[in-house]
Length: 342
Image (cartoon, rainbow, N blue to C red; front, side):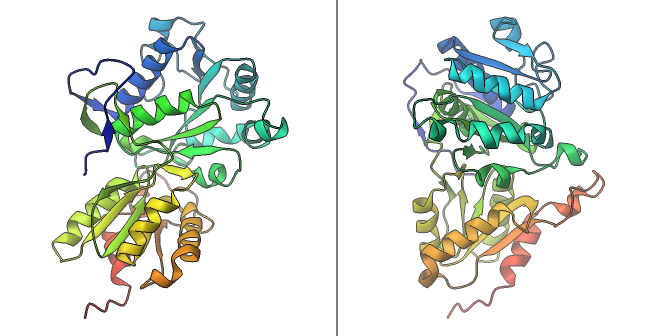
């Protein structure tokens, strides 16, 4: 995998490089943000003494006290609703939904209030808040613990929706999200929590609203985000042995969409496929395919493909390996095109 584009840290002296998981990078980002700004508060279900189901908030309550890190009731609408009030009055809440499908009880708060407050008040009231949502599958979880809910949030004007795929981006993008004066839905692919990278903290990667080309290629553009970036990279490596040069683009930001970076890659390769774990019908890849086709139609050598989960509720752990997109499924999809290499 290509090394993330990084810039020298400016807010503190960089530490010596050390192996860090994505969960550790997120923990470090929260810790550093709280140390730098006492307006930042963290709360949600089991984020205090336990440190979160995935230990992303491990040790934060011990370091900052239970007035800045605390366990909430099991009431997601209440978690987000109170965060709206806190953000309106000057705090910078970072709330955790614990699991993707657990966010649905907070849907009304997020769509009706979080997303619309700035517009409703003609810009007078902003909501500097972050809603962390562990998302997607491949961890052996049951259906309410493995959803890919990104299309709901990305279809809501007023929300910025981002999803890192690696530890460096996880740290940098979460710091940027906490610094933002507008609400951010920060989606964290659970299957990547244990992925590791050598990092010197604090690290700043590309702005979170920009996609990144993480592997150069000339024949096909694979568009992925979060957990499927690894799938795309593995498919590209396998295809290389067959003489196919695949470029991989990590979207990073789902809304807003980086038309410039993705469009440039598509115009170079003339073929593209989108990979995501969510079901295909009405999924995020449908918007990506339509958007790119509208803007780049005369550059396309073939229809844009979607390699996705199936149009069913997320299956049981015993079956999820058959549901999730794999490098083999990606390569099979690419082979469905008519190729004229003359």
